[in-house]
Image (cartoon, rainbow, N blue to C red; front, side, top):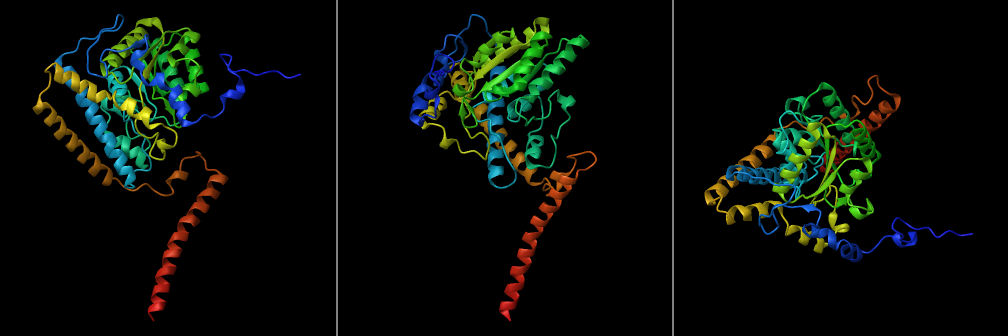
Length: 402
């Protein structure tokens, strides 16, 4: 007796195999145009046109709009500088936020000083809004600190490399906030790939059951390294919240105004005792997953160009120019500030000490471990082999001279 297996939605399991790049691009075509989706919150179109939304609105001054533009430009600049520094061997790794500036600046600027933020490892823009020095971020990726900042000084937790675990930390913290009687809220960042982790599902469950004042902020940048979102979920990510008993909303993650409005509302929802809320910022990772990744191996050029036309900085600049809210002096000032930031970052990183080559073995266990000791000795021998090889080559050169 044979049973014909089907996937969710009635698709035969055998049809779920690997597809060609062209097929993926064609099937993902609808996903490249989020502004066409009725449920998506958008206040600023890719063409820089201001639109209204029935549930979410925002009224910002010219100064506030220019501030959002400044935040995004400066964040993009130090992110680009970090990539260059990594390529020059100054950093061990870097996870770029290119293309996600609006999602991060908009949501970060929506928080209050007493709110608590739990990031992953790509929230450089959110860190900027919480006054965390970019050099602290770069020091971590250089391997000379274990975070580099006091989480309680800015209410910005240390970067979390383990995928999805910070959602549990945020939920637990939010439960504590509620017990303390505070009206602060908590926000946890994670990506579309992390939404497949069990930790995230458990965090959703606890947050819903205990009515925790936490906002789950998912930056859906379309790719979990090389795996597209369509292989992570059969429904839009924001719709998952309904199954856990709390609301979810999808926002145009390249629209800084919409992200700011939606995140403010979500945080107010949480802090007013209504429990958790899920925000899915529909955006795109324009760069590689990290500097060890090559996105050309799995992404289509057409998809990239489509999202490039929705650049978050360009659309806000277009709006500012159309409304006469910024002049050439403003942009020239931002360029000068951007250059100064890049120089400070570059010089600051290059003045940092080199990470200790054996430090990776320290503090793995409080009381030491035989296996770690063995691995440390093996690595020390490996490093010494380079010194021996160098000495041998110099000796050989000397003998040949005689």
